[in-house]
Length: 283
Image (cartoon, rainbow, N blue to C red; front, top):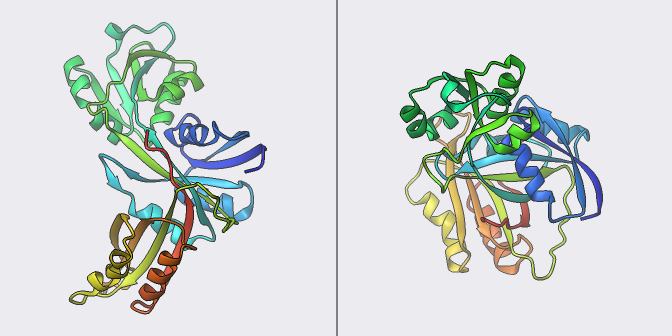
């Protein structure tokens, strides 16, 4: 990847976990990320398609919350290709104004998932909670309201963005909470670098018939290809047909992968390869 600056589109307010994931992705590269907030995941895709951003980042899976089917639907429907992935540990902090004290806090704002993931601590503190659209947006609101009795649950990263005080750190109930993001771009190089481990993301449509999925997966098993994810989502037809999103270890140009994809294409009406990309570090 060339050095320099690149624009990355993400969903949410400045300070969102998606923006933090961008910085993690680029920290090992000679890249200065320009982060472009968007109000929806669809807007992220459109910013990449229009050229306003070279890359977009999309959350696709959480180790607790599960698979984000809408994310794969948007990627598959957009004029984009998956070019990378990054894993980010979700670490929630309780954030207040610079002069706030924990004993003063009465009300906490955050995204419903964050409130749920921190409910044990919130229950012990006996705090009133209010759900909002975004963790970083909650931090922004606490900054704007500037009231010592209000707090937000967001990341330490968001706290720095809005010059807030960390009242408590790592308040999530599970320490194994990670979100996986895919990065998308309009143009991707099909070049495979030596020594790099790859993953490939594929989507295909399948009707409701006995053994259909088994026959689609058999070519990968016969070639010894490890499937790292398979999920289903309904099509728009209403005829009990499904899209399957599938990921496997390896690059689509590998001979075994080519053979497996060829056999899959002979079994279903359409196979869409969403991209082959370097595997992300799960740490």
